[in-house]
Length: 377
Image (cartoon, rainbow, N blue to C red; front, side, top):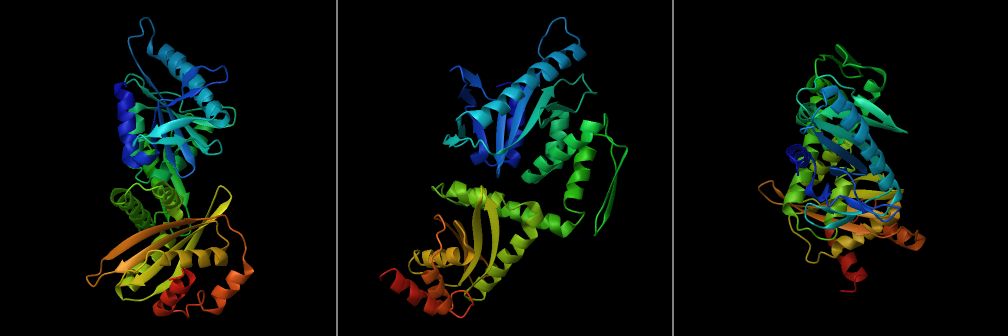
């Protein structure tokens, strides 16, 4: 691995989970040859960041502009085009940083990026087009500035999309950038990549510090989940669901998360809060479940609520976040993933409604009695 490839991967891993940073980037093409897919591949939610990296070697006889045209805007662009075609066309299996095999999804959004390492080149074309794809081009120093300016992984993709839109029609950065919304007006002087990235980072969150803080809190929850949970079969799916919560929706998530946390510490039994996501045409419901101060005697008690919520919300997947409070104000959090193709069951739905499962009439004691009966205990 070259110095620039190593640096790009290090910066990428700062923002992306090892579960979604990929290696063994090879595939078999349509004439049965083994080919390199790309130099770096990151995934967040349903988006791939595809990176091709070029480093200025000892190319004798070539001046910097000739090298840029031939290597960056020639070879690298051809390689990015081949990468896009390969992901869209072939069955490709790579490994994540845990050395686990992962099959790439043909229907994921692809955001292509070319990074080049040549300190002598200061001015360069910032975006090129490949069919319907806009490919961002950054020097290695500009890439580092972008990755250091933007904290939230999802915002990296948003920034690259906005950057590509700008440079498709403009040759240079704007002198002054202006953005207005209901809450604020953002005016920034733009001199370089860092300024441009910082402007969009503020713009994405409407200049609202609380909205940005909630997005950072959600990122902290995701990081804590990654660091504490054993890598079970459901771990990757739960992590994917959490990553699907976009920063714009982080405040809604945190409001419900904090509500369930406080109820659990007050020894309350409450599962009234939920949010829903759509991924690959299927609905996922996230249920915030305040259990109280005492854990269930049987973890299968969670299954009953998952089944009830699936019928109520017509969801294929349920992520139950269970809060078990402690008197010192902290919480134990259990993550329960329940996946079963939704099939409407009017009798089950009527049963759950009649016993008060959805209107809050059922308390913990009645709920536990119900679980004993339904589970045959």
